[in-house]
Length: 460
Image 1 (tube, rainbow, N blue to C red):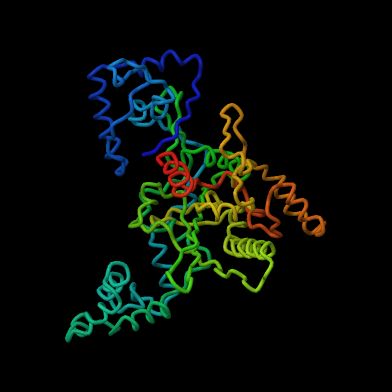
Image 2: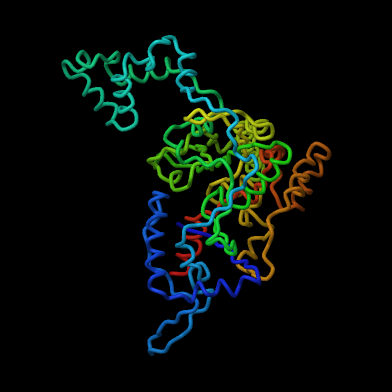
């Protein structure tokens, strides 16, 4: 599990912590290994043990068999590998964060489903029986192709002996499309929140994880262990105690469907940060749901290239605003949701993370192509990193004010945006989202920026 380590230490504890790194006691190593196995069993998904880089206090031999000390910056995680193997010391947020407002142990999902169905006696309506429901579920989630399924149930006696009400794939699709109750708009996050598969693993409140009880080294390995959730929970507890934050994670990527005729799709997917990442990142867990599709038009009727790019950006933000509009009031006031176990929380869905390739990052943040999507660094200075003077993210307030100047001064809008170093988007969707700084919500583009942009460049 990849961890980012906060290496800030209190001065009065520095001497005690150094003893941890110099300990070579065999019994302590065996005890640590036992704790590792217990922790792995509790977490269910820890990565297998890997060979670690040498500690900062160790040395290695070069080709001339000379011992050379390993500097701390050359060690994995700055030399904290041994501490990372410990079971983390957890400091919970406390107060009323993520509290259960009501416990309803009845099957609320089934009751709601039956209220919207025609046959209140049949739990599996519109299917005639549990067997028919299981067959339909298998055909859609795990079964063969539509043609193969049709040929299977066309075998003499299959439909009659199983008591199926559909005789081919088309009839099954019609039954699903026309008879199943509709899903409320933008309740995809509620569907994930109420999914019984995720119920035992959902996280409702932030935590701080440390390598030991001294709380000198903090580890970050999941969304609920980060600073953002803790800071937002602190803010909400002052005005709306008992809030359960539901971090909304949006991902999108324009995908080519064919190698000819330029057919493409622009899907938007959603997941929530309450689901641990070791479950969320597995395709088999189905932790991502489809929100919709963005337009793929290139607006060829606009001949001016600059105007076409500007209109494409406006179209993208208008569509994203329409998709994310329901979370604006829900994020501010909260909305009551129940888990699969019947526990009711007052959830505040908040846009937390945007996952996309660099073109989508630039489009989302209204920055210029070639520039950094999160900070004011221009494209010609991206390689000039100064660790002593690290660049801060874009000033969100300044950029929002520049983007909001269109109504007051349409003539000077382009110049104001140019001075701010952003694209002139009339109605950016990020402007009205509560508790969001879009420039701190962008995740790195691992494939294009890290692998192809750095690793392949260095190797070649």
